[in-house]
Image 1 (cartoon, rainbow, N blue to C red):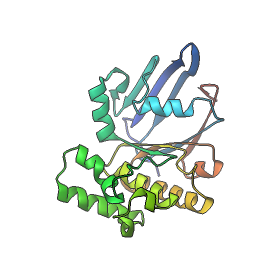
Image 2: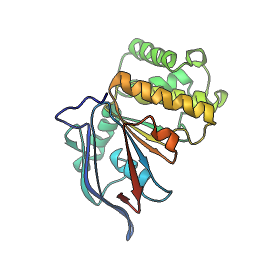
Image 3: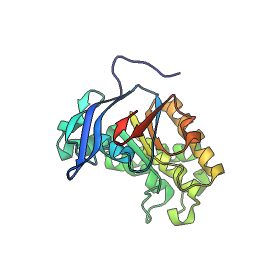
Image 4: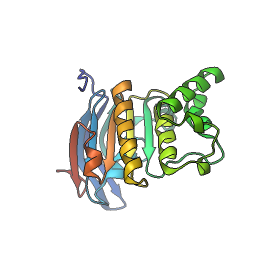
Length: 224
């Protein structure tokens, strides 16, 4: 059950983005509530990943508003955006993006390290999450020593270790076999239910969309 509140976790209004003169996003609007999972489906090149990058503060928009917990990130400075990403956002990508020279445990604790948390607190929280995602026994392994499913589990643990309000997931099962992908989707659903994080899931997969409360479809830079 989605917990409704008077303040959405995410509110996107009339978002516009161009690459050069080519329009990529054409007036996109959406909202996510606390604990709500929304799937965003559409063909390649329709603007899904660009929308996620704008929400995550990686791309600047050309028009419209993005409010994260009532804070307009389109008006933030680079330092303010970085702080918002560290505290309120978590991201899971198709290619995992784990740092290759850090162990699974060190990758997961990294967001807390950037927030200045004490080492004992970081380690305890990271170990707890690795246990939760079923790979505590791989805590000392480097990413190159992990399977694809194990790397994605570590990436999910890292994405939620700092208790973000919003989790952005871009094709998180795209590089996994069907069994590992199904396990990762179950994990995303469970973590969202347990933490109350809202999830915006970009996917090509109707199967992946089944873990979500709502499905939005995108075509040519617009929700349809």
